[in-house]
Image (spheres, helix red, strand yellow):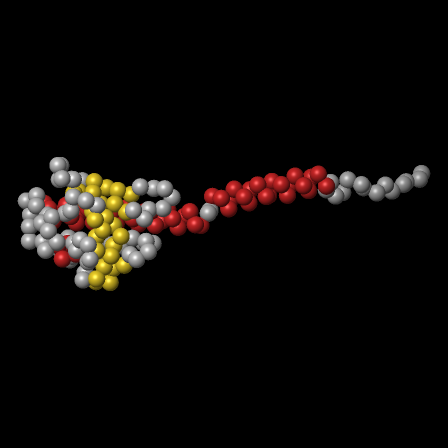
Length: 156
C-alpha cells in the first residue's frame, strides 16, 4: 500500500480574508477616535464649568437680593444690576464687594476666554456678563465664550 502525502494548501489566509479583517479594524479604529475626540471632550468640560459658574453667580446675586428685601443695590457700591449686558470686571461692573465673601467665596472666571482672570476681589475680569430686565427685574448671567455652538445663559 502506497501512501502519498499531500501538502495542505488551505493552511494560510487568503488575500481577501486579510483585506476584510484590516478593513474592519480600520472602521472600528475610526469610530473609537471620533468617539474619544479629546478636543471635543475638553470643550464640553469647559462648557460644563461655565454652566456651573453662571449658576453660582446668579445664586449669589439672588441670595443678596433676597437678604435685602428684593433690592440688590442696597449697600452695594456697584449699584443696581445694569439693564444692558455688561461684563463683570473691576473696570465695568465691579460686583465683587457686594458678593465676596458673604455670598460666594471667590468669583468664578471663564475657563478659556482670552483675558479672563481672577487674582483678587480688587482685580478681576470674569468674562461673564450680567443684565437686568428693565420691566420684569429678572437677572440674566451668560457666558459669551461658550464653545461647540452652545448658548450658556441663565435667567431668574
